[in-house]
Structure formats: C-alpha cells, structure tokens
Image 1: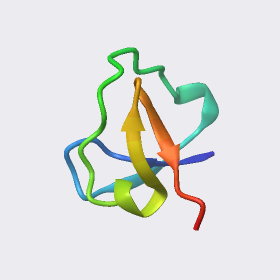
Image 2: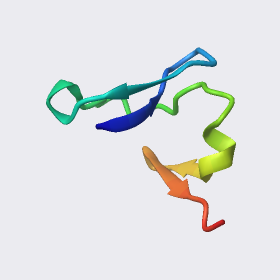
Image 3: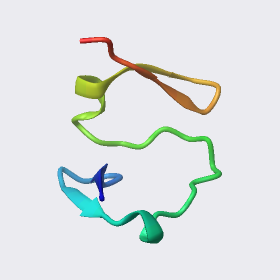
Length: 51
C-alpha cells in the first residue's frame, strides 16, 4: 500500500501497488503537502526533502 497525494485536492489516500498507474505527463501535481516531502521539481521528477 502507498500513501498518495491526490492531485488538485487536499485529500490523501492509500492505494495498493496493483492499482497504481504511471503518470507520463512529467508535470508536477498540485497539492498543499508536496512542500513537506519535496524541495523542488526538476526534469519531471521531485527532489526529496532530507528532513
């Protein structure tokens, strides 16, 4: 199970691995919690926060 931030929402949810789908848009998600987990977004990837 993965804890997932829902795009354009304040919601989070749990998703089983078999129900995950790859997002090939390389665009950042819009979610208020992204700044708690990541320091930035470059080349289609999030940069993980070390804290």
